[in-house]
Amino acid sequence: MTKIFKVGLIGCGHISETYFRAEKYFNNIKIIKCADINHNNALKCAKIYKIKALTVQQLLKDKEIEIILNLTIPKAHYKVAKQSLLNGKHIYSEKPLAINFKDGKELINLAKKNKLYIGNAPDTFLGAGIQKSKELLEKKIIGKIILGNAVFAFPGVQSYHPNPEPWFAKKEGGPVIDMGPYYLTALVNLLGPAKKVTGSIVNGKKTRTIGIGPKKNKKFKVKCPTSYLSTITFHNGSVIHLTLSFDVIAHQNNHIELYGDKGSMIVPDPNMFGGSVFVCKNLGKPWKEYKTNKLPLGRINIRSQSSRANESPTNANYRGAGLSEMAFSMLNKKNNMCNGELSLHVLDIIKSIMHACKSGKVKFIKTRCKKPKIFKISDIKQILN
Ligand SMILES: NC(=O)c1ccc[n+]([C@@H]2O[C@H](COP(=O)([O-])OP(=O)(O)OC[C@H]3O[C@@H](n4cnc5c(N)ncnc54)[C@H](O)[C@@H]3O)[C@@H](O)[C@H]2O)c1
Image (cartoon, rainbow, N blue to C red; front, side, top):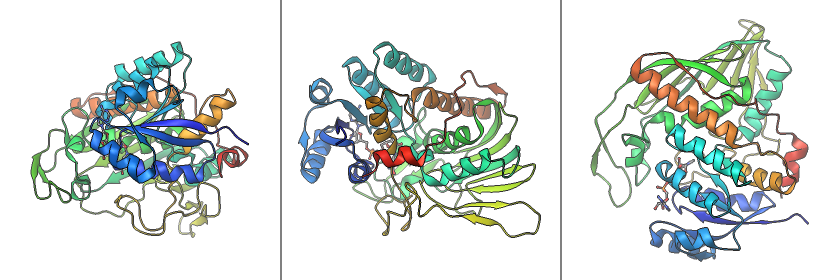
C-alpha cells in the first residue's frame, strides 16, 4: 500500500472543493485539518468534509501535518508558503508562486536551504490535453515551431465570484497574474524556457459590478490594467503572441495555436486537463483530431455545471494532480513536475510581460528552467486510485 501524506489546508475558499475532490482521484494525499484567516470559513469547510479546523498558527505547528496546501489569495501565497517552510513543512500552493519575483526567489531558496519540497499550480499541463500536444510536438509532427497565438479573453470574474476585488487590485490584479500561469506553464512545457517579451496594455471599464453573493450589485474600482497584448520569444526561436484580457465579451479564437514548418496545431484549453488536439499538415485539408478523453487525466469527470464558472459541464478537471505527484516525488526522492524552478520562471515571465507591456520596452527574462519532461502514463497510473 502506498503512503498517504497528511495535508493541512490553509485558505478554505472557492477552489478548496476541487482539492477535496482530488482525494478521490489520487491515492497518496488526504487533507486532515484546515485553517483560514477567516476562522468561520475554516469551520464551514471542516464541517462539510468532516475534518478539524485550527487557527493558521496551530496548523503551521501541527506535528501531524506533512504538507501544507496553500489555497489562499495570490497576495498571501508568499507569506503562507514562507511560514510553512520555516515550520519545516513541505508546501504546495495555488498559482502564482508569489506576486513579486523577489518573494518567489526567496521561497525557492528557503525550500532548498531547508531541504523541503515546494510545488506550485498550475498542474493542468500534466493533463492529457497538453501532454498529447507535447508528445506530438516532440515527434516533430508539425516540424519546428516558428510562431503561434495564445488567447485568454473574457469579461472578468465579477459576475460569478462573490469576492472579485483581488482580480482588479493594483499589485496582484489583472489577467497576467490570474490566467498567465496556465498559458505560460503550458507554453514552457511545450517550447522550453522564454527569452524576452514586448507588448502593450489596453484599459477597459474603470468600475465593475459584483454579480453574485452577499455583495451583489456593489460597484468597485478597477486598479490595474485589464488587457495585455504581448509577444514572447522563446530560447528555441519560437515567437508567440499572447493576449490576456478581462475586457472581451466574446470571441472565437482557439486557446493556443502553434504554427510549425510542417503544419499547424490547436492545443486544448491549458486551464483544463483534457480536450482534443487538432493537427493540419496541408492548406485546405481537414484537421486531424487526437482525442484524449480515454486517457488518464483526460477522462471527463465533470458532467454538470459546477459553481466554478470556468468548468464547463463536460470537462476533465484533475486539479490536485501536481500535489499528488509532489507527494509521490517526495516518497521516491525525485524532482517534482510542478517544481519551484518552473514556477519561478513562469513568475519571471509574468512580471516581465507586465513590465514590458506597461513600459513599451523589451524585457529580457532573467531566469531559465529545464523544459519539463513528458508525464509518462506509467507514472500517472502510480498516483491514480
Ligand atoms: N476560484 C477558481 O476557480 C480558481 C481556479 C484555479 C485556481 N484558483 C486559485 O486558487 C487560489 C484561491 O482562489 P479562490 O477562488 O478559492 O479564492 P477565495 O477568495 O474564494 O478563497 C481564499 C481563501 O483564503 C483565505 N485567506 C486569504 N488570505 C489568507 C491568509 N493570509 N491566511 C489564511 N487564509 C487566507 C480567505 O479568507 C479565503 O477563505 C487563488 O490563488 C486562485 O488564483 C482559483
